[in-house]
Length: 107
Image (cartoon, rainbow, N blue to C red; front, top):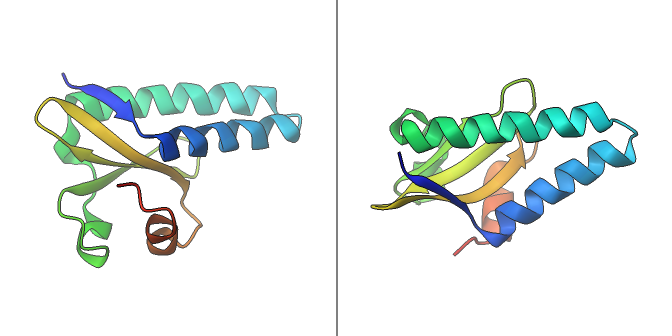
């Protein structure tokens, strides 16, 4: 199992999603989002190759993969490194993913 390490932009994405649920008075949804995120992190820590590489070619980012959160419309974007999983973003699936990935280049 590899350690999952979210980058600053991923942490911001997570905070914004939680804040959105809380601002809507949906505390249970916020807690569910955290649980779903922890489950996704646990999954990619054990099985990093199972994520989709759909955006890797379009963005010219070899190794980029994503894994969807259960019951939430968010996608965890990551790259498997030798000793850890590098989480770049956690984005809502309805966004223009390529534009968001280019807009805030996670490098």
